[in-house]
Amino acid sequence: MRNRILTVVLLTTLALTSGYFLMPQKDYLPQGNRNFILSFLIPPPGLSLE
Image (cartoon, rainbow, N blue to C red):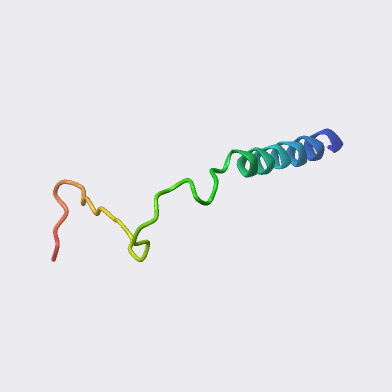
């Protein structure tokens, strides 16, 4: 039981720290209008819109 808890804690810590260190810099992306959300909605074939 102790090994399971230790494994879960270690894997969670590893995932969080690697995500933190692999995150790009804040100024990595070009400056521009950021007040929008881009979304695509593709309904499955045969779905009725009514």
